[in-house]
Every structure is written in structure tokens, then in C-alpha cells.
Length: 411
Ligand SMILES: *[C@@H]1O[C@H](CO)[C@@H](O)[C@H](O)[C@H]1NC(C)=O
Ligand SMILES: *[C@@H]1O[C@H](CO)[C@@H](O)[C@H](O)[C@H]1NC(C)=O
Ligand SMILES: *[C@@H]1O[C@H](CO)[C@@H](O)[C@H](O)[C@H]1NC(C)=O
Ligand SMILES: *[C@@H]1O[C@H](CO)[C@@H](O)[C@H](O)[C@H]1NC(C)=O
Ligand SMILES: *[C@@H]1O[C@H](CO)[C@@H](O)[C@H](O)[C@H]1NC(C)=O
Ligand SMILES: *[C@@H]1O[C@H](CO)[C@@H](O)[C@H](O)[C@H]1NC(C)=O
Ligand SMILES: *[C@@H]1O[C@H](CO)[C@@H](O)[C@H](O)[C@H]1NC(C)=O
Image (cartoon, rainbow, N blue to C red; front, side, top):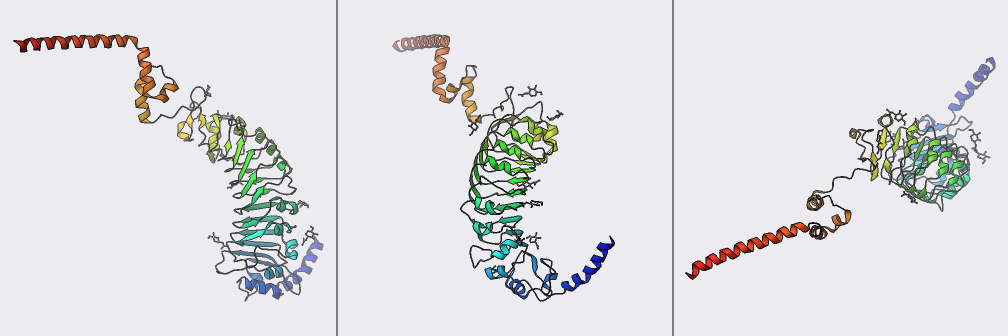
């Protein structure tokens, strides 16, 4: 205790001295090229963090957001003099890149730990990203990544903890082998990813968030997804996944957010979902799911978001759930199928007379009047007799009237 206090007392003057050291002039120049005012002590600005080295201080963090300058550019020379940065964050600073795509000098590439560009850099090559080998946090959005395939990204950045690449035109398939032992967060939403989720996804057992929304992924959701036991958020919506919901999902105890909407998932909704006690957001809308919804209102009320609409063959049990819940699906009949929605007015009225005799089958319904009238003749023999008698009687009456008239005329 005493010892640490003396160390602190010894350090304090050095810290305060180093706080007065000037910023490396090369870095001052780089800041000026980015239209960052440097008249006052640049290190005192909230968007910058400097180290305490002597005789010159160096930048460790640079944050630029909501830039208003019209022709901002991030030159290679500027990046080179900013090679002491650990954190580079660019938010809504649209750069007119002179050197395109953006390329990172090797010194910066090994120093950088966290890189964020949202609606700022225009394009980056995947190879250039793969050189950022000490990176732990990468967030890129609203730019173009020039990549032969995403595996280039994963193959070298093995220290990654969080990875977000969205709205980046990222094409290709997910890598078969992702070896990032500390990865907890993946968001690759709104790209052009194709193919399946490889079953080797199970290697990412530290993963807490997996967001692959709005791509062109297909195939079944692999059974091994259940090995991602740390998952809290699984968003696979707006792809072309098919097959049924894997039972292995029941092995993920901490799932909070499950969005599988807008795919072609089929089969029934497994009842185990109602046992997932941490679930807050469940979206299964717009799929091909069928059968009776296996949930009661205790479960549904507990959720913040619950969506199952847009599954034509899914229905809810009227004795379990109230129609007040507005689930956007039909109630079930006694066979567990949706009660058919009332057909349109015209079709019903034209078909009503023919089917009212209870001898209704689908074929007649479709063929319309012709089949129906044919069927009537066939089934209603006695009616023909009545008609015949009626015709005979009326012609007799006509004949009598004619004869009477005739006899009057001839007189
Ligand atoms: C940037 O602008 C957005 C809204 O346009 C605002 O929410 C945000 O706080 C701003 N950020 C900074 C650092 O000024
Ligand atoms: C970056 O990582 C390499 C190992 O890949 C290591 O040798 C180097 O010291 C790291 N650089 C920095 C600045 O942390
Ligand atoms: C993973 O994280 C641990 C603890 O934060 C660290 O010691 C280890 O070096 C990291 N491994 C890799 C490959 O980054
Ligand atoms: C899960 O991911 C979605 C995006 O798909 C996001 O909107 C939501 O906030 C995330 N929820 C949690 C708990 O991480
Ligand atoms: C569900 O989808 C899979 C894959 O598309 C298909 O093989 C299977 O026959 C479908 N099952 C049903 C009941 O429609
Ligand atoms: C609702 O379903 C859950 C899970 O299946 C069950 O534990 C609970 O007892 C049910 N509640 C009612 C009121 O039926
Ligand atoms: C609806 O629920 C009731 C009461 O739990 C049950 O007896 C009935 O079989 C269920 N109907 C269907 C179609 O599942």
C-alpha cells in the first residue's frame, strides 16, 4: 500500500509534465488535413486521445463524426503519420477517397485494435483488412468491400472479438473454418452472402450474437447451431433458409432474441420454445410453418415482440388463446388446421344453390354450372316426371282454349 503510494507520488509529476508535451508535428499536420482545428492543444479535444510519451506525444484514438466539410479525404500519407492509433472511429464522415480503395500502412495495420467506419470510407479491400492482424473490434457499414470471398477476412484476423460488416456488398459464402477463439459478436447483415451456414460454425462456441439477416443464404439451419451455447441473439431473417427449426435450439439456454422471419422454414413450431425462459423477442413470421401454435398466453405475454403472421397453414387453438391477441393467423378447426377464411362473396353465392343439397365435392365446385346442372338431371329423376306432366297439362289447357276460340270464330 505504502509502496504503491510512493510510486504514484513519483509518477504524478511525470504525468503532468508529459501532459504539457506537444503533439508530434507530423500528426498535427495529418489532423489539419482532416479539417480538425489544432490551434489549441489538440489532445484536449474530446474526439482525440493522446499518449503521454516524451518529448512528443502521439495519438492513440481518433474519432471523427458528423463531418460537414464537403471534400474530406483520408490520404495514405495522413494514415501513415497516424500509425500510433489504437482506435480509429469514423461516423458519417463521407470521404472522397483519393487512393481508392483505402489501404492501411503496415505500421498502422499492426497497431490498430479497433476500426469503425460507418457511412465514411467508400471502399476497402479485404486483403488490406486481413493485414490488420492485431484488430479486436471491426465495424464497417455502408461501404464496398472488395473481396474474393469472406474467408480472406477471417483467415488473418484471429484476435477479433466483435465483427460487423453490413451494407458492404460482401459476396461469397461463409468460410468453412473460422478460427477466432475470442469472437463474441458477428453481424454480417445486408450483404450478398450465398450458400449454407457451415456446420463448423460450432467452432465459435464463445459467440453471443450471430446476425446474418438480409443475405441470400439457403439450406437448412445446421443442427450444430445448438453448440453455440453462449448465444443470446440469433437473427437469420430475410434469407432463403428451408427445412424445419432444429431441435438443437433447445440447448441454447440464454437465447433472448430469435428472429427467423422471412425464410422458407417449414414443419411445425416446436413446443420447447415455450421453455426458453430468457426469450424476449420471437419472430417466425413469413415462413411456411404449419400446425397448431404450441404456446399459451402466459408465454406470449412475457415476450416483448412476438410475430407469427404470414404462415398460411399455421393456426391457434381457440380454447387456449384469445383472438384479442391479434396473432395474424387463423384459429384452428378440430383437426388442427386453420379454419378456411370465408370465400369471396360472388363465388359463394353462385355455388350456394348447387352445393345446398349437401352433395358437394371440390370438382363440381371448380367446374361451375355445367357439371352442377348435369348432376341435377341425374339425381332428380322424379322432377323430370313432374316437368313432363306440367308440360302435358299446359298444352292440354292451350289446346282447349284454342278450340274454344276457334269454335267462336267459325260461328
Ligand atoms: C451525429 O449526428 C447524429 C444525428 O444526425 C446525432 O444523433 C449524434 O449524436 C451526432 N454525433 C456527434 C458525435 O455529434
Ligand atoms: C501485433 O501482433 C503481433 C503478432 O501478430 C505482435 O508481434 C505485435 O507486437 C503486435 N503489435 C502491437 C503494436 O501490438
Ligand atoms: C483471447 O482472450 C484472452 C483473454 O482476453 C487472451 O489472453 C488471449 O490471448 C486471446 N486469444 C486470442 C487468440 O486473441
Ligand atoms: C439482436 O439483433 C438485432 C438485429 O438483428 C438487434 O436489433 C437487437 O437489438 C439485438 N438484440 C440483442 C439483445 O442483442
Ligand atoms: C420442408 O422443406 C424441406 C427442404 O426444402 C423439404 O425437403 C421437405 O420436404 C419440406 N417438408 C414439408 C413437410 O413440406
Ligand atoms: C403455459 O405454458 C407453459 C410452458 O409450456 C407452462 O409451464 C404453463 O403452465 C402454461 N400456463 C398455463 C396457464 O397453462
Ligand atoms: C385445443 O385445446 C384443447 C384444450 O387444451 C384440447 O382439448 C384440443 O385438443 C386442442 N385442439 C387442437 C386442435 O389442438
